Image (cartoon, rainbow, N blue to C red; front, side):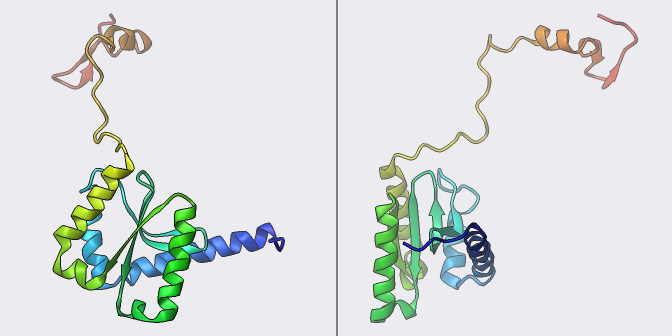
Length: 169
């Protein structure tokens, strides 16, 4: 295996990140539609789009579920494109990722079924989403007197007026 210098590797990584940004800016209609369904944590996990993974850039990626979603346009019908897709899928599956492929026309015609398939794959992966918002502190653990002990003027703060009184605790 040829030795790749660190500078070359850094240049390649920077190129992939820049190329991924370009792909995000020039998304296809199907990618925009699916992103509108996946973004803002509408599913219980977070998705990224045009994420570099090794030498490939995944259309959509969920790290928590180790899930890669690829959308196939009209150009994926050729033999060369099919071979590239199989190589990419093999690379990702050997690294523990699950790859889901959807033709663009399915995203347009049946977005609810595509979303249902993605959600099923997330649940099958066993991904546990982080609670959003953060969980509340149970009663009895938080002691407000300990906090005021660290900040002596905090107890003298008048919560209704929003200012510190002259009295010290």
